[in-house]
Image (cartoon, rainbow, N blue to C red; front, side, top):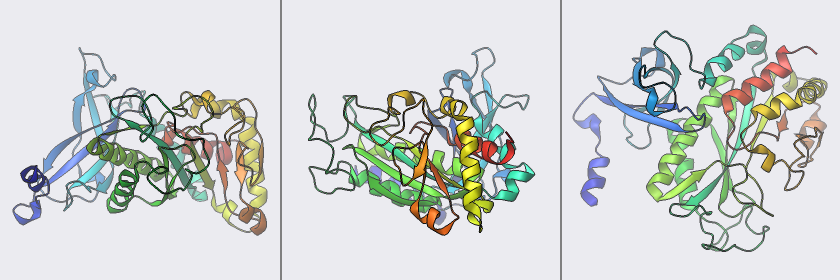
Length: 356
């Protein structure tokens, strides 16, 4: 194994200018991630300088076997924490050979919204709290839980420490550092309420970059759990019963909200979100009805309510925002398996472009 490790950690820059680019994309389910690598003649910093590439869409649920070619368009570049050196990770979106975006390509529509002059002028910032659950490899049961049994009730696990409370910290710390190395604006991590469940936060990130960074952070996490022999779950309610679900709380502000008088802008934006509650819920993640029950720090899925410092609300405004009269708010409805391209662009469209 030491030889394998040595070969894996070879510094290519000592012998060649060539680099490895790992192209990453989203598969047909809308949540599965795929990737493959290619050799490039030298370092690249601009995604527009990268070549397009094709793959077999029929093996990803995105094309038929008779016409299987799908084209990858590079959109964002990150440093590769696994290969290091000048090697890169490339976040791509997907098109058919005629240049039309696939149905599973949610980035394309999001980019249109974020490039709208009214949206761009508001400089929308996002801070996304991605919760996830570490699962055991051979049984569908959370990491650290006794097989066929349960740990003690929730209470000591949130931000807890100790071998009987914090399960998988080595994975979490490895992921934290990998994100920082890659250039993702990861702003923190913590253990969550249910044992075996953790959270990382990305942001503040501007516009479409929030979606790119969440997807690449998810990619890094799945690669790290692969190495550790654990399984990443983004299921919004991985264990039935009196256990917290997993969400992706989305903190949001515009330039108008961050400026003096922004609290009134925030309240108008929340009013818009209330009027489009059903549309947002339908787009906020599969299986979210199992999580949004009105219990475990959630609002009922059929009810929209907002409040200051209320973690049982659909939308929460922080005390600091109320006191300053400007700032941001938190949409607590998105599930852990939400598509960040959909959620971020939908919030911007509803709060900036839509005029009820």
